[in-house]
Each structure stands twice: as C-alpha cells, then as structure tokens.
Length: 104
Length: 152
Figure 1 (tube, rainbow over the protein chains, first blue to last red):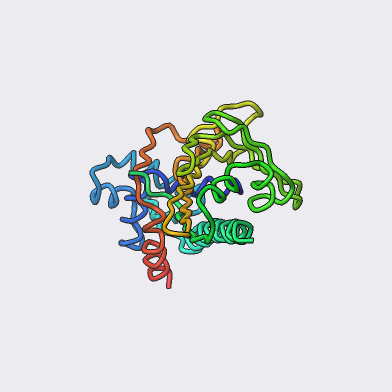
Figure 2 (tube, rainbow over the protein chains, first blue to last red; figure 1 turned 90 degrees about the horizontal axis):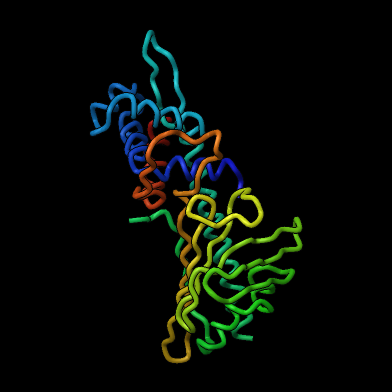
C-alpha cells in the first residue's frame, strides 16, 4: 500500500475529523471558527483536524484577510474511493482464483 | 463500530473441508492468493508469508484466528515496520475469512478491516487522541458526491 493511501485512510479514520470534513463539504468552504460552531469541538481542535486534512490533500486552503478558509478537494476523495475499489477488486480476483482452484 | 472495511463473498461448488484447506495450507495459498509460494504457521500468533513474482513482493502477516472449518483470520502488514515488530492496528489490516456450507456449496466471505486505524508515519502524527469509530468509506461515496458538487 502506498504511503499516501495510508495517510489518507488514517486522516479519514478519525470520527471527529470525518465530521469536520463532512461539515466542510456541506458548506463548500469555511473557517475553523465556522466549522467549530457546527460541531461539539473546540476551534483549536477543529483547526488541528483541518491542518491534517490539508496536509494529506483532502482539503485546500486560502487566506482571506486574517482568516484561513478551507474547502474539500474532490479529486483526493475520488482517488481514495478509487483505491478502495481497487483493493476490493483485488479480493474479487483472489476469490475467483480460489473458486477456480476449488472447483477444478 | 469499525466500518472502514472491504467485504466480499464468493459461492464455491466444493466441500467446505476442501475450501478450508485451500485457504489455510501454504502450498495452496501460494498459488491462488500469491503466485510464488507461501509459508504459514497455522496457529494464532503464527507467521504468514505469501509471495508474488511481480516486483518480488511478499505479504508479511500474523495468524489471528484458526477455527476449522469456519473462520481463519490474519493481520496483514501494510507499513514499513521493522522486521520482527508486532503487528498492530496501527501497522496492519485484519483479514477474516468466514466459511459456511449450504448443500454442495461453500460460501466464503472475506472482510478486510482497519484501514482507518493505520497510523501516519511518526513525524506526521498529530498529538491528539484518535477516535476510529468513524463510518468511512461507507459514506465516502456520499461525501465525494458532495465535494464534486461543490467543486463543480
């Protein structure tokens, strides 16, 4: 498995971080302050989660005045969904080989 | 509840004992799973290796559960963990085979789980308690559609 996949899997594996990302996806774009209002999580904690998501490429950010606005990056999510589909397809291939061997 | 999983099933027209032996014996694992041999110490905690010719690749794992002829599980090492290191939730996924028979058919269900609890490399790790109860990638498609809509 590629390190980048692991990073993204790990970044998505945290329930609070998932909520942060979901909230951001619903809004389209938002600051840590705005997202913290949606969730029972402090602003500093939301900011940490956003920074993790930013580092693995699941969100992008831009500075507007004194605020940093974050938005989800669809291409990274698509790549991750594709990777999960590939891993599932690999199991299909293996199970087909097992079936063929067992029935031969 | 850990739902970051891959779940697959196949129906095989063969006795459950035969399928069990194909899934748990090295000489068979090395042909349908890998293509260049395998070694297995078939007991909980035992070592498992499956080899592929392409890229000289080897699966390194540890047997987790052996319940003839219904359940076989192993941890699959996913990260660059030093040789001899314990396989844990942070560096491996869990693969579970469940076998059931129905007449002349054996149903094999495979579940690979634990993608969400793989740990980031040490220097990337964030100092916060990780809560791995999240429901991705079940909802990944939903979120992806959301994000695509937003980006469009």
